[in-house]
Length: 259
Image 1: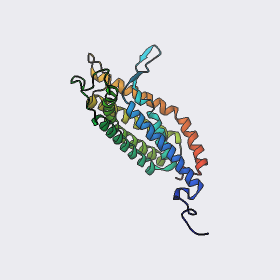
Image 2: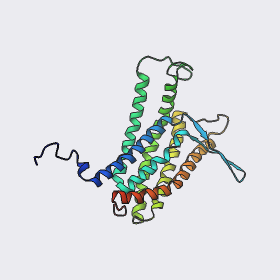
Image 3: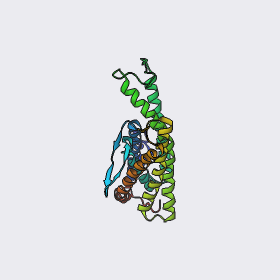
Image 4: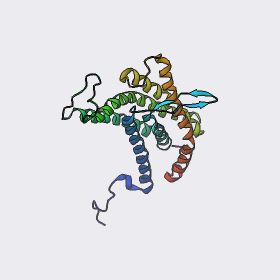
């Protein structure tokens, strides 16, 4: 048969069904990771939700930004990619996420710079309430603060997550999946939460702080609230993480203990 463009494989990815299957799964995990990242940066600190609860008669404060809610999904995705595809591809995804953060900021800046020119209230730096564009500029203002904080925190936390994950994988000889999943996520989320809260407050001034009370305890409460939420989410996702890894090993024909 004549070798023509119609008879040749269109792309090396389609050279074998199993290779194509592995790339599709990677695309799903990477897409979920990047989509979630973009969503949480835009929602960011537009609203804080009060998840405070009472335990043994003691009131436990827990106030978290709405952008924190989907954040544990990003760590589940990077842990799955680290386990299935290895450290290098997980690190590539982390850097792609940083580029996405920058892209979000560029679009928000361009959207505010294009005509028509909007008259800003000197007191708030935003258009007057009820005027066209007020909602965009409110979201833009808060997103700038959230993205600036998350860019630093995200890069530190995700790289810590990938490196700690593989540190425990080497240390345990590929055993104790639950240990590397939780240890990497808990350490990286402490880094992330602390950095986000401190940068959001001192750089963006966007936390709902009570000026009548001492700042230190309030920042500690915000950090503790965000961290506890993420730690609980990390513990909860251990089961799904195990099930997904075991299923993907068979589906993708990969032995993660030798990858």
